[in-house]
Image (tube, rainbow, N blue to C red; front, side, top):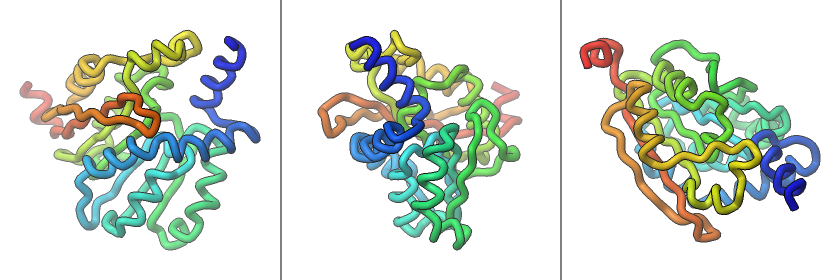
Length: 217
């Protein structure tokens, strides 16, 4: 059982091979409630540029692009398997310059400062080697007033499933909120929801403030 759990935990962080392809489909289904709440909290406006970190099977990108609201949706992913699947899935939108997908590490995002209006990520927090560094990068590439929405499963559930024994780093809500504050975000708030399997999850949001405001605080 421990070997199986370790294998699944590794695949969740880095989907690969035939099992990874299957897992990406399952994640689209299992993350549906989280994706819906994230989409609601993004408060999309016409012409905005949106970035998703760790797009997995692409369900949230699909939901965002089908609103017809953003001018551009960009996704970064560290799994080549996920990138290949979503490049095929969104080929039409990529050719229309509505979607861009990249292979990248979240600790060093390949974008200039103040580049995006919205940034979101779902079920990726546990796999970041340096969560504060990733959140600092998120703040760097967001425009002043830009919004971050980060969705994650409760620490209680992850601990119960013993995923923390296999590389997952689980966080309490207060810890996530403190990291956002340290990274430079303001107006931080957290919302909760229940997944299709009735497990609790959270969405923590924050607004990027400009460098001058951060320096004065």
